[in-house]
Length: 313
Image 1: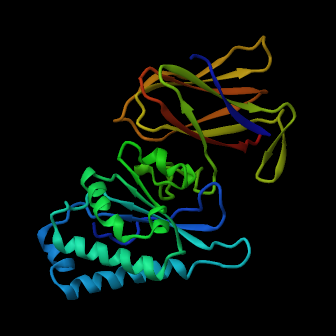
Image 2: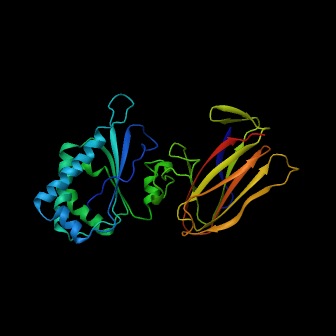
Image 3: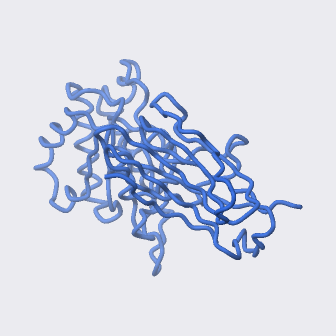
């Protein structure tokens, strides 16, 4: 079997959901939904949704219907999914000066608190601007303590770190720091069903992840493969925000054989692809070393996952 482990070498009105997430890592009783703000709330759209009481009521009905659709997916049997984990992206939300939006938000909170108090396990607001926190402070006296305990706020910089506390990284959309992308020909090997590992790379340190091929067998898709047979190792890696150097090498167990440089040390910046993939044909026992050199004064979050495929002789 192959396994990997790290070793340290040096010291707003919502739009319809854009994707759904699996339960947080620590529970099997929650489903998720993501709500994203439109790119811009122009005057025409704002008036269409909030300018009078009738339109605000229509918006509230839509919001309740949206929640009801999620509730219909719940399963209250033992071990079933029995609560909702909700994420709201506030990146493009309008400012606090919009009176109509404030009225709609306050009414929505009241309806959800009075009628659906136990369905939402957590409500996470990401990319939260400073004014939203101030607005929340103003309306929080109207909430119960139980409702307030369900709210979590994260700035843009801390969005990935916050989401990974509740959602596995393979389920977090790529634009929020995770690995989830729509299945396409450009990424045929990995899906949201393939778990990823998370490693924290400390400031000004080098972190090495060893992906070790065990001595006798690799378990591949339910079949046992003799390691004397060739196989293809495929992996993908991401460091949120990059600004690190990345290199890869293969070290055979036989000390008389040479170490193979798969990827020379390469500086990765924020403008590079958020996720990169590699593959390597394994013909003998050994291990793949993924090395991340973090020269910055900030800790970095490393995500990686891998698969093994048999190759015909």
